[in-house]
Amino acid sequence: MPRKLFKKYMPNEEKLKRHKHLSWLGSHIHDPNLWHLTRKSVARAFFVGLFCAFLPIPLQMLVAAFMAIFLRSNLPISIGLVWITNPLTMPPIFYFTYRVGDFLIGDPGETINFEMSMEWLQHSLGLIWWPLLFGSVLCGIFFGLLGYFGVQSFWAWHVGRSWKRRSERNSG
Image (cartoon, rainbow, N blue to C red; front, side, top):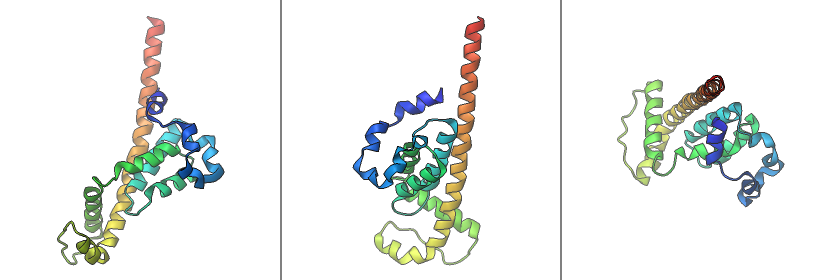
């Protein structure tokens, strides 16, 4: 079952519940629905984690934790998927989301020459924030939904395949 696949890579639930940096979640962290590995909770976790990964804000994991509690998705998967955007992947991902936002807004304003420097970022942030935010939210929703439906489909396919193999084994 897909549950075994996900459980194989999951951190220890009891160890996470006792972790000092998660104490701010209070009694919510002891809600068993946040730890279940069901088709719905894992699919929701993929939506939450992928959506939050595309947000161009600091502390994306906090947003993912709040959303996981609110939507009753699997907490470790929701938070873990946020790390798709890490220091190595952030520049290309956020450049892509900026380009998507800029294309969709269609603002033929000033052409921005990208440069990897703090000075450039401070000078250009006023010009790029709206296309970046718009593109990031749209990409987050798109890839979040893609992850949600991808998990739903994979789970159904895997369970169907398991049932078929079991019936073949029992009949043969």
